Length: 401
Image (cartoon, rainbow, N blue to C red):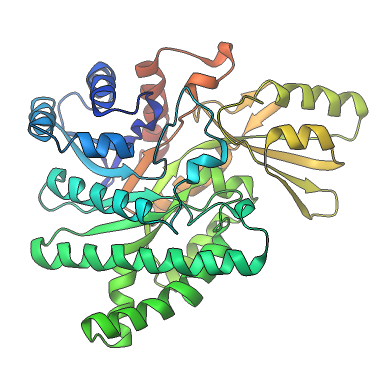
């Protein structure tokens, strides 16, 4: 829905199923009810997730025509997509394979380009579109820093091919599209600092050389092209897990002219330890309830000296039981809830980022992204459409003037 000259929606990676038939059936089952509650009389956008399989199947036969007709009939449109999970994302063990195939592969490149051509066919006239994607690869797949730097360079060159294609689309159609790179714990690009440093010291220098050779562009022309089409996906959950200073990161992005293509509105789990043994064990017992086998739930602990300790999964952190002042865990919990008893959510981080945005909008795309409904503890589960609506109502109320 339109709010403060931006589009607010939810990401359909919440729905299980990997075929186009599965995706479409979930949309038809849930979206009309959500729209009726949130935007009954005005158009409402969809944050579409297509697996690689679905992205191939939607282009077969008259599937695209049927989907366009359904969008028209339901007063709906697509303006943003999630191109991070390539394959299975529900009802299977995902863990680190959410990054596979990574940006060093031709499979990831082909999938992403296909998504952009689908988005070009779907997006309403006059709107800009974005697709969020993996932060290049997964850190723990590389044994040495040299290997990771080599992979980073290979990935960057493929991302520049995306920028080249998006520039072609822009020049031919006037449609502005951007690739929204999403830092997350244990990604090759994990933090705001890592993203900005990569952007300035790897992407731009190689991009300037690439477009000088391919298009005979001057350095400032190449930089402008890259900044138009390669942007940041600001996932609030991921930045909150790393205890990142939102205002400082957003200010630095603005100062350097690096665009935020999308805010993903999501919350992590957190807890503060009092130092009492009974309190610590009780908190660990509560975290253990969220230690499920489908997704990675990285933990970043803030130690008493202010240093951060990182664990690749909740299971690892629970085994080590470090002497921390606070834990934050990568488990997307409902954004409209802050208190989980001994645990809390990082909802306050969402409130802070939305307040910054409300005072100075720095993106046109806002997307709620709680994809873990299927693996939440039973007491937190409610019907899907109701869950989605509660999330979007909460955000809408936060953004009301």
